[in-house]
Length: 190
Image (cartoon, rainbow, N blue to C red; front, side, top):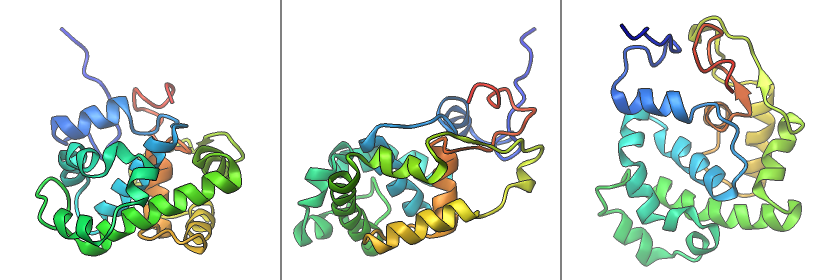
Protein backbone atom coordinates (compact mmCIF):
# COMPACT_ATOMS: atom_id res chain seq x y z
CA UNK A 1 0.00 0.00 0.00
CA UNK A 2 1.37 3.41 -1.01
CA UNK A 3 1.40 5.93 1.85
CA UNK A 4 -0.75 9.03 1.33
CA UNK A 5 1.23 12.22 0.87
CA UNK A 6 0.51 14.95 3.39
CA UNK A 7 0.01 18.21 1.51
CA UNK A 8 -0.72 21.78 2.53
CA UNK A 9 -4.33 22.22 3.60
CA UNK A 10 -5.14 24.61 0.77
CA UNK A 11 -4.52 21.88 -1.83
CA UNK A 12 -5.40 18.69 0.08
CA UNK A 13 -8.82 18.35 -1.59
CA UNK A 14 -7.97 20.11 -4.85
CA UNK A 15 -7.96 18.64 -8.32
CA UNK A 16 -5.00 16.96 -9.99
CA UNK A 17 -3.80 20.12 -11.79
CA UNK A 18 -3.59 22.07 -8.53
CA UNK A 19 -1.97 19.17 -6.70
CA UNK A 20 0.66 18.73 -9.41
CA UNK A 21 1.41 22.46 -9.28
CA UNK A 22 1.77 22.29 -5.49
CA UNK A 23 3.88 19.13 -5.60
CA UNK A 24 6.30 20.26 -8.32
CA UNK A 25 6.37 24.05 -8.50
CA UNK A 26 4.81 26.05 -5.66
CA UNK A 27 7.48 27.44 -3.39
CA UNK A 28 10.45 26.26 -5.45
CA UNK A 29 12.91 29.17 -5.80
CA UNK A 30 12.79 30.62 -9.33
CA UNK A 31 15.73 32.57 -10.78
CA UNK A 32 14.88 32.69 -14.48
CA UNK A 33 13.69 36.11 -15.69
CA UNK A 34 11.12 34.80 -18.18
CA UNK A 35 9.68 32.46 -15.56
CA UNK A 36 9.52 35.26 -12.97
CA UNK A 37 7.75 37.47 -15.53
CA UNK A 38 5.33 34.62 -16.23
CA UNK A 39 4.60 34.21 -12.53
CA UNK A 40 3.99 37.95 -12.02
CA UNK A 41 1.62 37.86 -15.00
CA UNK A 42 -0.31 34.80 -13.86
CA UNK A 43 -0.67 36.06 -10.29
CA UNK A 44 -2.01 39.36 -11.63
CA UNK A 45 -4.37 37.54 -13.98
CA UNK A 46 -5.72 35.55 -11.05
CA UNK A 47 -7.12 38.65 -9.29
CA UNK A 48 -10.80 37.89 -8.72
CA UNK A 49 -10.52 34.36 -10.13
CA UNK A 50 -9.52 30.94 -8.86
CA UNK A 51 -5.96 29.70 -9.23
CA UNK A 52 -7.36 26.58 -10.92
CA UNK A 53 -8.73 28.77 -13.71
CA UNK A 54 -5.31 30.33 -14.27
CA UNK A 55 -3.48 27.00 -14.19
CA UNK A 56 -5.86 25.66 -16.83
CA UNK A 57 -5.03 28.67 -19.03
CA UNK A 58 -1.27 28.73 -18.42
CA UNK A 59 -0.34 27.25 -21.79
CA UNK A 60 -2.69 29.74 -23.45
CA UNK A 61 -0.76 32.53 -21.74
CA UNK A 62 2.56 31.09 -22.84
CA UNK A 63 1.33 30.92 -26.43
CA UNK A 64 -0.28 34.39 -26.37
CA UNK A 65 2.70 36.11 -24.76
CA UNK A 66 5.62 34.52 -26.61
CA UNK A 67 6.68 32.24 -23.73
CA UNK A 68 7.05 35.41 -21.64
CA UNK A 69 9.96 36.79 -23.62
CA UNK A 70 9.84 40.36 -22.24
CA UNK A 71 11.41 41.90 -25.35
CA UNK A 72 8.74 40.44 -27.64
CA UNK A 73 5.87 41.18 -25.24
CA UNK A 74 7.06 44.77 -24.72
CA UNK A 75 6.66 45.36 -28.48
CA UNK A 76 3.03 44.24 -28.51
CA UNK A 77 0.52 46.98 -29.29
CA UNK A 78 -3.15 47.87 -29.66
CA UNK A 79 -3.77 45.31 -32.44
CA UNK A 80 -2.35 42.57 -30.25
CA UNK A 81 -4.59 43.64 -27.37
CA UNK A 82 -7.66 43.55 -29.63
CA UNK A 83 -6.67 40.09 -30.88
CA UNK A 84 -6.02 38.79 -27.37
CA UNK A 85 -9.40 40.02 -26.14
CA UNK A 86 -10.87 37.31 -28.41
CA UNK A 87 -8.50 34.58 -27.21
CA UNK A 88 -10.31 32.00 -25.02
CA UNK A 89 -6.95 30.60 -23.92
CA UNK A 90 -6.37 33.54 -21.55
CA UNK A 91 -8.44 35.75 -19.27
CA UNK A 92 -10.00 38.23 -21.69
CA UNK A 93 -9.71 41.35 -19.55
CA UNK A 94 -8.32 44.45 -21.25
CA UNK A 95 -6.61 45.76 -18.13
CA UNK A 96 -4.88 42.47 -17.44
CA UNK A 97 -3.72 42.10 -21.04
CA UNK A 98 -2.44 45.67 -21.18
CA UNK A 99 -0.72 45.22 -17.82
CA UNK A 100 1.23 42.24 -19.19
CA UNK A 101 2.61 44.44 -21.97
CA UNK A 102 3.37 47.31 -19.55
CA UNK A 103 4.99 44.86 -17.14
CA UNK A 104 7.20 43.49 -19.93
CA UNK A 105 8.43 47.02 -20.50
CA UNK A 106 9.02 47.25 -16.75
CA UNK A 107 11.00 44.00 -16.81
CA UNK A 108 13.28 45.42 -19.50
CA UNK A 109 13.86 48.58 -17.45
CA UNK A 110 14.59 46.51 -14.33
CA UNK A 111 17.05 44.40 -16.33
CA UNK A 112 18.82 47.59 -17.44
CA UNK A 113 18.97 48.89 -13.85
CA UNK A 114 19.78 45.66 -11.98
CA UNK A 115 21.19 43.28 -14.60
CA UNK A 116 18.25 40.89 -14.26
CA UNK A 117 14.72 40.67 -12.93
CA UNK A 118 16.04 37.86 -10.75
CA UNK A 119 18.58 40.12 -8.99
CA UNK A 120 15.95 42.79 -8.46
CA UNK A 121 13.19 40.50 -7.14
CA UNK A 122 15.43 38.50 -4.83
CA UNK A 123 16.94 41.68 -3.33
CA UNK A 124 13.64 42.10 -1.43
CA UNK A 125 14.49 38.99 0.64
CA UNK A 126 18.27 39.50 0.68
CA UNK A 127 18.74 36.67 -1.81
CA UNK A 128 17.39 33.86 0.39
CA UNK A 129 13.97 32.26 0.83
CA UNK A 130 12.15 33.28 3.98
CA UNK A 131 11.26 30.18 6.01
CA UNK A 132 7.97 30.76 7.82
CA UNK A 133 7.34 27.45 9.61
CA UNK A 134 3.61 27.54 8.92
CA UNK A 135 1.54 24.95 10.79
CA UNK A 136 -1.72 25.69 8.94
CA UNK A 137 -2.42 27.59 5.74
CA UNK A 138 -4.95 29.58 7.79
CA UNK A 139 -1.98 31.26 9.54
CA UNK A 140 -0.62 32.68 6.30
CA UNK A 141 -1.16 36.44 5.97
CA UNK A 142 -2.62 37.95 2.81
CA UNK A 143 0.33 40.33 2.59
CA UNK A 144 3.52 41.13 4.48
CA UNK A 145 5.93 44.01 4.83
CA UNK A 146 8.10 42.35 2.16
CA UNK A 147 5.21 42.12 -0.31
CA UNK A 148 4.17 45.71 0.42
CA UNK A 149 7.69 46.97 -0.31
CA UNK A 150 7.91 44.89 -3.50
CA UNK A 151 4.47 46.05 -4.64
CA UNK A 152 5.25 49.71 -3.98
CA UNK A 153 8.55 49.55 -5.83
CA UNK A 154 7.08 47.68 -8.81
CA UNK A 155 4.26 50.23 -9.08
CA UNK A 156 6.81 53.05 -8.97
CA UNK A 157 8.47 51.34 -11.95
CA UNK A 158 5.21 51.24 -13.94
CA UNK A 159 4.11 47.66 -13.20
CA UNK A 160 0.38 47.00 -12.88
CA UNK A 161 -1.75 44.33 -11.17
CA UNK A 162 1.01 43.98 -8.57
CA UNK A 163 -0.76 44.84 -5.32
CA UNK A 164 0.69 43.62 -2.02
CA UNK A 165 -1.63 40.59 -1.81
CA UNK A 166 -0.86 39.60 -5.39
CA UNK A 167 2.84 40.05 -4.74
CA UNK A 168 2.70 37.89 -1.63
CA UNK A 169 1.10 35.11 -3.70
CA UNK A 170 3.88 35.64 -6.25
CA UNK A 171 6.53 35.45 -3.51
CA UNK A 172 5.05 32.17 -2.30
CA UNK A 173 4.87 30.72 -5.81
CA UNK A 174 8.40 31.82 -6.78
CA UNK A 175 9.94 30.51 -3.58
CA UNK A 176 10.87 33.84 -2.03
CA UNK A 177 8.98 32.55 0.99
CA UNK A 178 8.39 28.96 2.04
CA UNK A 179 4.77 28.79 3.19
CA UNK A 180 4.44 25.03 2.86
CA UNK A 181 2.98 23.75 6.11
CA UNK A 182 5.63 22.05 8.24
CA UNK A 183 3.69 18.77 7.97
CA UNK A 184 3.61 18.98 4.14
CA UNK A 185 5.92 16.61 2.31
CA UNK A 186 7.26 19.61 0.30
CA UNK A 187 8.17 21.79 3.28
CA UNK A 188 11.71 20.47 3.72
CA UNK A 189 12.34 20.17 0.00
CA UNK A 190 11.93 23.89 -0.65
